[in-house]
Length: 389
Ligand SMILES: *Cc1c(COP(=O)(O)O)cnc(C)c1O
Image (cartoon, rainbow, N blue to C red):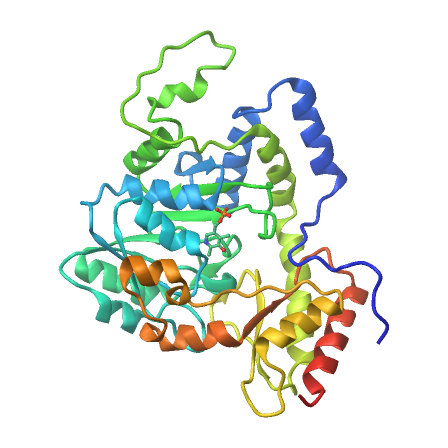
């Protein structure tokens, strides 16, 4: 197979003229910061998720969304929060930033999502919350997790960074827990450059999130630069600087309008990969669970660790040499030195997650891919994996 000319960037966003025009409009309007387009993006997102607009607050990242949600719970310092080791480091870092103690519970080997049985086993008298991640866009077993939360009176925050389109038993991801946190980072399913959203089910919690997201200033501070005249604000706690800009929302409004079409394209690519890799020495993603909607954010293969099969890291290099951007989602978090030093975690603490992290590779699945791009990826993956090593 002939080498392509340009590098296929992993997770490259599909940006169209309408996003570009909307950003230019914001630049020309003189309103770049938090303003009417952020308000519209919040309304549009709430409508997409079937919630009321006050239940959604746009912020500048999912990391910020997670931090705000954890702070808004108002937990006693040192309280334990159970989460998955198969996630981005921000999930655990925000627990630490909130003065809380992360505890990892291993994943299910088929879904790669947190295993409710492992959650139950990790509960101690200090446990106050569960922070599940809908990995790759596949919903967690929310019936089991919510039953555990109810039984032990625990809060739930859903990390929905991969799960904008995800549904479980007819309900949107992010609507089960106290809060749902979304990401609009450049590689995610809806993009604003950097950006995030907090969804929350009670008004008091969302008011606290909004206050903390803007320096701890009273709620009306959001309106202090509007055309209705100067308004004094009051600082009611020491907050953060986590607001989204209109420049970012300008991109998100049009990305969100195409969310269904982008999902359909990724679903097509997913199906094509599933059939094309059936005979290779790999484990493909499990079939979707009944009555769920997968967001198809990441397409991951686990490379068999077997004689004659290329190692995972050599496979990553081989793809890069063939001009295909790939990712690793994720090395199990206890493999990282900081968590070992600060929390005493050991890689073997979560064996399923360790094994997945050592074998996994993510292939491009952006809606921007052409059919020719998809067939190129398939051809290269097949030829590299079918060589003897
Ligand atoms: C991307 C991601 C985040 C962080 O999102 P940002 O918007 O980049 O802060 C958190 N959790 C998971 C699972 C992610 O994939």
